[in-house]
Length: 102
Image (cartoon, rainbow, N blue to C red; front, side, top):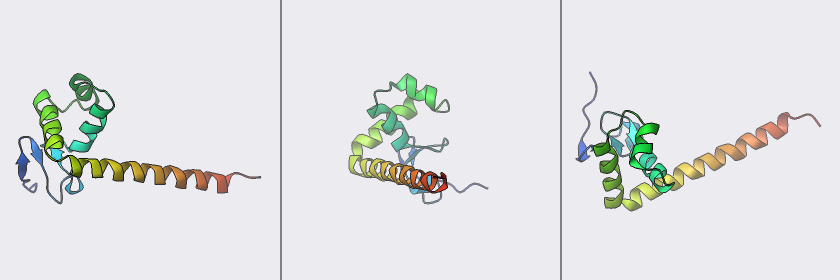
């Protein structure tokens, strides 16, 4: 049986064992920060739904509303995710350089 999640905002859940404890859209496993990332890169609600077809308009707007109610939390998650991506790229580049014969 699935662990019940606590709804903390309409359509938004946040539980330790669900999406790593990050705020996520209910029953989708799409994190709020993913919706916000696309929104900040100019994607419309329709384009966000195209990227995440299991979302509906209400869920997209709920994720954005949660972001505007909790900007520090989501901005910190976006920064951490960006830092992790940069670290991965740096490590990958270094690994490839070690493997390339001179």
